[in-house]
Length: 344
View 1: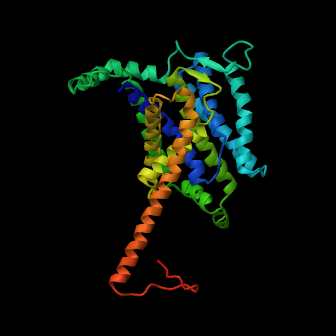
View 2 (view 1 turned 90 degrees about the vertical axis):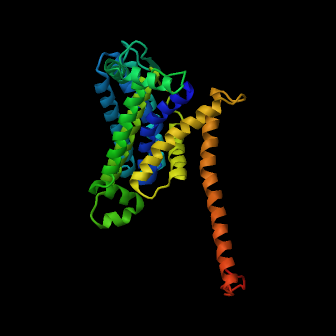
View 3 (view 1 turned 45 degrees about the vertical axis):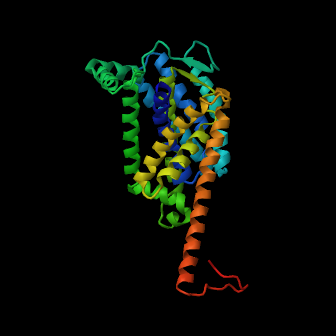
């Protein structure tokens, strides 16, 4: 129960990062690898400012701004520097590694190159709101309700869940609204057909820069929240983050579909939660341990990519067989190709 609850908590936070990945990979059609660096940038900025005594809300806002700047620089490298999109993200990711070490080094006098910042005895967004929920008696009320339902192991971090759930829902609805605005539609059109949107005198360079900035701002926000949730910031915490984001997007789309923007963003959020739950269950297998995290992630992504294709092929075979059966029942000869083979 407690392990499942923790995976849901983390999944809701990672959903914010997955929404950022969705903006670049699906909306802009831009393979942005800046994510691995900007995630740590958000975590490092928030952790550094909290340790230095700043309000956690201000520290989190600063992390979002830092992520936005990182994404914009990637956009500038691509649009103004004419660098390949993939290479632009890789260059920025490499640069951010050193920048993140510098940021975390600011927590100590003359401490450049610090790779880990603990937040054990500091206030975070979660402790602030947990105290608030506790003062209202919300934690006790929910705990009593679950105990009455027969749940013995009751988590004590309802404040954390409420905070991340509220933040994620707000961001999801803001994303839905933004992608339907004139600027949002222009960004979507840029990802679909850049030449077409240029014919309408739209500045696609600015739209790409803005889209990358917003994407990495969301990624940095997720990094800041994860740092405060885990009570530390580490230089290695962003490794493979882009794969986790893609896994969340792919899993969500495969299960819930992508017919509308509202449905797609919900799919991305749900996909992130499902991914963390699958990962939590996988770690409970006897022959797997925490060192197999990347292997588990790769396996989940492979399944999410391959299984929908197999299902689609099976559906297509059934549709062809049904059409052939209908033709035979109506005694209608099947159309013939030039080679003489009947068409299904």
